[in-house]
Length: 73
Image (spheres, rainbow, N blue to C red):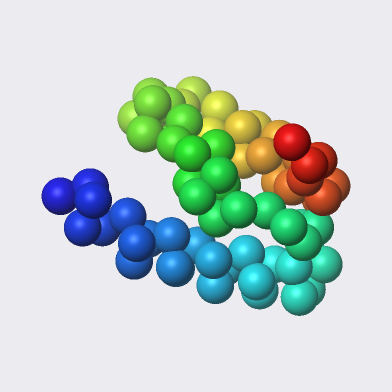
């Protein structure tokens, strides 16, 4: 099931990444699959007000990091 949904999900995130790069929200060069992995914490936050607040903080941290182009490995 995950294998079947991975390609469409990555393609959808790629479109979002392209839009964010075009509007200047994030830097170019980020891999959509990496962003999906970064965002996977959302499945782990508590399903309550504290979890929602934690999710907002974590999303802000992710987007702060995405404003810088990735470093070559």
